[in-house]
Length: 428
Image (cartoon, rainbow, N blue to C red; front, side, top):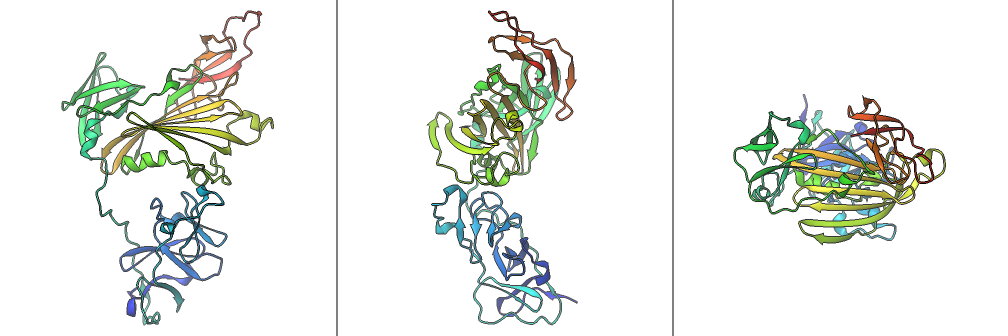
């Protein structure tokens, strides 16, 4: 028969020593969550709080790098005493603030085949268990003690919120949506939109249906790329997140997590330093911009060796309250530009619907990368644009309709030459 994991004099048996390696193990002691880990193979066990002090990211997903515990979100590194020794975004000359240190338990020891934690000071040594201990389960995260801006905040009544893509509501149809903890019924009667229960208004913009419960005071997000014929554009299928919109917006605006969260794609694992951004206040929000080095695997000239994988990237952020965001990334070396539009629908306390629109331009005189290479109207070197008459098919990856152009249909230029574009694939 097992016994409780708590020993005498404030010690808690939290895990078998054989179960603890260089991967953090979540444990509980006295109602508080910790992770235990060996910072070197076969080394002594260290104990840390369950979450990083920066953005409260669970340290169960952390990794051990060069004898340090590294947070998976922003790469903060902690030594065996819990001191933050590296914040990559600050660069080599940066000095982490003491507030970044981890508040460790008073002691951790490995005895009698078990890892023991003492959350508070104690004079005694870990006891020899008379029976097999039953470790305390890792507790859930603690709830904030102060006011919280959540999806049901009354201030959100006075804003336009996305509630559906336009294509989700057909003429003569109806659609139920959730917004701010309530259910709303949308109808499309011909060209008119109606909503029940009564609201300040419902409108259609950027291919999205918007609803304002009360008189809105927010500013609309401008997306100039939507009217630019050089961009291929489309909405991704909406997804739902089991959390509030505020932290999601914070993540979208975070420029320092790329080298760690997106290291396998465009993050650039060795480019953690991020220069301070220039933030410009604007009506209803702000904009900011910065330049970084990153990997650009979507550049076709990287495959041919004409350009290196590591390239400059200029990133600009535009934010409009409460949850409208635009991210534009420009690659000066290739001329390619990708813009992402993020719209968040606060449905309930534990539910947010996310809308993402992708707008891509491969730069002057180039095809867009991947399966979707050109818009149905393709601007050629003559500066004009013609709709192709090629057959349509569905992209196997997204299900979107794409048009295949066998050759450019633009008229000859003044010199009698035609655009050389061929085999371009396009979507709308």
